[in-house]
Length: 164
Image (cartoon, rainbow, N blue to C red; front, side, top):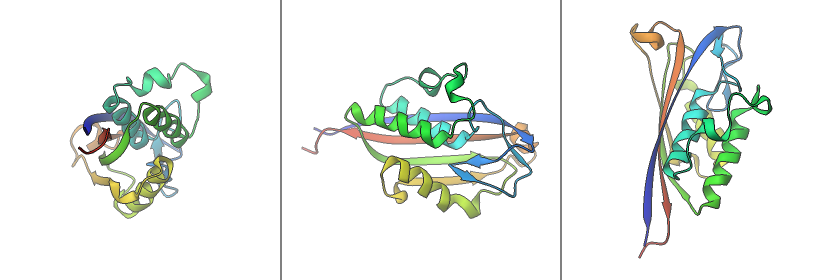
């Protein structure tokens, strides 16, 4: 019997001038601001990790990679995704698909969506077509609309078992 599990992830990081902007594992060199965080601040990858862990019933990113642990200071979030995915697959889960949304005024996400999908898919060992990335703006509303932060959301489908 095939079992399906859905997980959701949400992450937000303030944006800071002069900080490297990494989202979905891709460096946006042209961005004058970047997400501030204990790691590299990659809100998109963090949301994906939370969605994966949630679908597998394995808690959240803070439990696995606490921001109080100096080992994760400045770490590449794709490395965290590697560890989280290994933990999920060890529980017998396989990847179905992911639907992700990034909300920010800058940087402009659309031209780099394919690169982001490729980076995350490579870490997960899946076809990049199984990850969808959407981008939207705050339209002047809220902290995203004022350019103060980047917010990312992810929903994933995992499965276990065999089709009967």
